[in-house]
Structures are given as structure tokens and as C-alpha cells.
Image 1 (cartoon, rainbow, N blue to C red):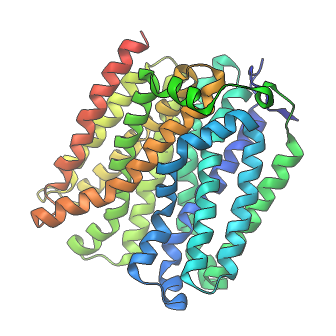
Image 2: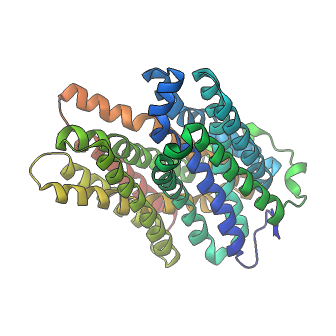
Image 3: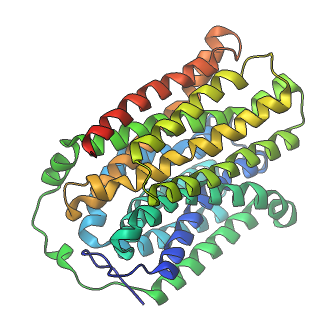
Length: 399
């Protein structure tokens, strides 16, 4: 049994951390299930391109608006309790989408799932920090960053055969079932104990003020914003680039993109291990963002062989993945107090979602204005400049 304790654990409960991590993977499957299903959804429900775009991006919009507020609520109601509630909301939103007969019902279902995702994404690293002993906390919380690429990779690879067999509604029902299984496991093994949270009297505004007035949470938020903007932009436009510039089929482009996404899993693991072994957080952030900036400068322009350019895309995702692992584990270190851990996680999550919302449109604007992909790399490299500056600032704080 696990306990939702605020003072942390004397020893690390790795089996329970693995279960909580599986919940994060489940949440990311909800994100990744939509892109492979969009053609069938548009055909059956007569969904226009603009509405389809909203169905995909509504997750990021909700996170941009509500991340810090989700953190405030989890700090008060308890992290494990909020994860269980989020899994219930995932199932409810999935059912609404599976039975919906028009684009409006599907969009509403995605709003519900999006709100659930933000709550779970904020509460999960907070609970992992509680379940890990201090000596293992950087490793355990850092590994949480693997949840997004793992879940998205599963969805990208598993959704097409499921859709072919039982349709996109069958896919929705399958993911609902996955959420209910995770909920049952959480109810069985993660015990919520009464804590001081329910008796807290500090105001929401005080917690927000304490969090955003400190440089540490602001650095984490800024680094997440620029990292996510870079990574999401490349993942969003890589299939289009491969199809339009290299004249490959959509199937080939999708598989190549899925492999790039999967490389991010290794980067998160590498960052967590190196951080656990004492490599400074600022150094991992700097190395990851420099790798992303330099490879982005090289894989968009013509000149290098295609396989070399694709190898640089893989390196972009692999080495860049050291950043979320380092940043996520920074929340317990830079939260004003344990009472604001969820709020701090919500703050960096808000930056991450804002980067996801802005990254792809920003690159699209550069490509449209310039008339080609050559300037996409320099545009992405600007984020690296920002992240290096923030990493050096973080170095001063953590000396």
C-alpha cells in the first residue's frame, strides 16, 4: 500500500512509483490517440480542418490557462486523490467521445480529457517526489518525463491497427478501458491518508505569489516553454517536411516520426541517470538545448545526405530529452515549500503547454514568410539561446 504523505518516504517505493508512472503513460495515450484517427473522424462526422485542429490542440490551450490552478488544487486535496479523479474524468471524456454524433460532442470530450490531463500531469511528479527517498528523488521524478514520449509512441504505433480492426470509436473505448484499469490499480494500491492539506488556511493568491516571485520556478517554466516549443514544432512538421521535401509516403513519414519521438524516451532516461550521478542540472539543460539548436540548424537546409539529416533529427530528440528530466526534478528543489510543490509543478506545466501551443504555428509562420524551410532551423535555435541563458542563471541559484 502507498501513502499520500507530505513529508516524503524513508525508502523509495519503486513498485508504486512504477504504477503512478503508468498512469502518466495512460494520460499521454489520450493525447496520442487523436492524430492517427483524424482522417476517419473527419470523414464520419464531417469535421472541418479548423475544428480538427482544435480537437488536437485543445489539450495545450487548457494547460496554458489552467496549469497553475491545477497545482493549487492538488496541493490542497492531495496528489493521489487528484490522480484518481483525473482517471475518472479521462474515462468519462472518452465515453462521451466514443458515443458522440458530432464534432461538438467530440470537442467537449477533449476538453474534459484535457482538464484531466493537466491535473494528472501536475499531481504525478508531486506524488512521485513523496514516494521517493531524498537520495533517489532526482532520479525518480526525472524519469516521469518519459511518460509523454512513451504514451505517445504507444498511441502512434497501436492506434492504426486498432482503428483498422474496430474503428476509431473502438480505439476510444479501448483507451477508456485502459483508464479504468489504471483507476482500479490506483484504488487498490495507493491509499490516501488524511494529511495537513485539508486543514490548510493559506490562500490561493499567497501560494501563487510565493511561487512566481522566486527565480527558480520562473526558470523552470521558461526552460520548459522553449524546450517544448522546439520539440513539438519538429514533431508536428517532420511528417510534412518528409512528404513534401523528400516525396516519401505518409506511412513512411509517420514511422520515421514515431522513431524520433521514441528517442526522447532514451533522452529522459539518460538525463535522470546523469542527474542521479551528480551531473549539475544546469549542465544537462545546457547540453540538451545546445544539441537541439545545433542539430536544427543542420537538418532543415539542403546539403547533407538524407540519412545524415535524419540521424540529426534522432539526436535532436535523444539529447534534447535530457532537459525535461532535469527540469521536472527541479520542482522539489525550487518550490518555496512542500506546500507549494503542486503549484510549482503547475507553473512549469503551464509553460510547457504554452510552448506546445506556440511552437508549431511559429515555425509555420517562418516557413510561410520565408517561402521555404531553410530559416526554420535558425528560428528554433533562438530557443536554445534563451535556454542557455536560463541554465546559467540556474547555475548561480544551485551553487
